Image: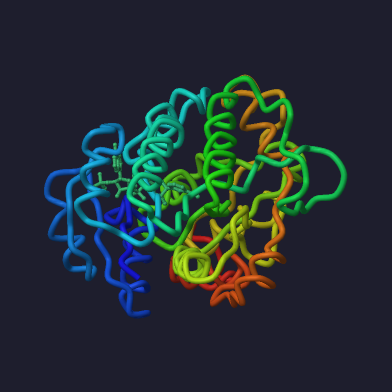
Amino acid sequence: MRVLVVGASGAIGARLVPQLVDRGHEVIGTFRSAGNAGRVRALGAEPIALDLLSARAVRQAVLENGPEAIIHQATALAGVRFGRSLDRSFAPTNRLRTEGTDVLLAAAREAGVRRFVAQSFASYRYAREGGPVKTEDDPLDPSPPAMARETNAAMRHLDQAVTEAGGIALRYGGFYGAASDGLVKPVRKRQFPIIGSGGGISSFIHLDDAAAATVLALEHGRAGIYNIVDDEPAPMRDWLPALASALGAKPPRHIPEWLAGLVAGQGMVMMAVGSRGASNARAKRELGWTLRYPSWRQGFTAAYGQPESRPARA
Ligand SMILES: NC(=O)c1ccc[n+]([C@@H]2O[C@H](COP(=O)([O-])OP(=O)(O)OC[C@H]3O[C@@H](n4cnc5c(N)ncnc54)[C@H](OP(=O)(O)O)[C@@H]3O)[C@@H](O)[C@H]2O)c1
């Protein structure tokens, strides 16, 4: 297929493009930052510069390049400081997920593009009730923390707009697998503590497995939503010490909920003690997806190079 990957120069895009090329697809890859054309070309795609927030440029890029499929992987989180308000940190990404998705879908419709796949997110979104692991059919959190309301609304918008247009929204787990992963620095510096019981569940996915699932969804997924997460949704009290160990860092500190609420905000507390994980059963069943890293236990070690049992550096 002739595939337009929007965000080809990014964390997932850079894993996805070579896998698409290996499968025989012809890839046009977009980048935003000047200087990334070479990176996209080296991945095996034909590079084009594109600002997803320019409706005119998006329309032109889609009509001129005539893709049979579009994969939307654009986010704007590079260099973002994560403070108490997730909505402030995610504001540019939220625009890419709302306005950006809408203009891309409109262009796809006009150009008669047959397949559309977009990046969504699974962790911390499902209703904080009942069991620890949720399927795509389970309800989303009806009242996310105030500091994450716009971010949750943007993800809902994307899920709904894409699936109503007959496309596929991939709710990925937290990405890991690159040296620049967001959690690496704070965990190394012991700035990411276990909050309260640390019982909130997170779902992760290695970037290579996320890319593999995306190729399968493109090739034969049906319209709708898929959780693209690993086999082991896990509480913070389990995955965070393993991540620290894999990084060769000291074990994480523990802080009480009340203190985390004051310092980091209620959104962080929710993720640490209340959140639910996601099930990958549909993606495995319908896409025939098998994971190279079925659990973050092997994946963190593979990504960061230290066995889980290695004693922490003094
Ligand atoms: N599920 C998850 O856990 C998750 C989801 C998203 C991001 N992240 C993490 O966050 C970190 C940084 O994220 P990031 O957002 O910079 O992601 P990224 O994956 O590095 O880049 C996102 C892609 O979107 C492109 N882009 C940015 N603004 C755009 C715009 N206005 N129009 C069109 N394309 C645009 C970027 O182009 P240029 O690179 O050329 O500027 C890049 O190709 C990464 O480590 C990533 O793993 C995690």
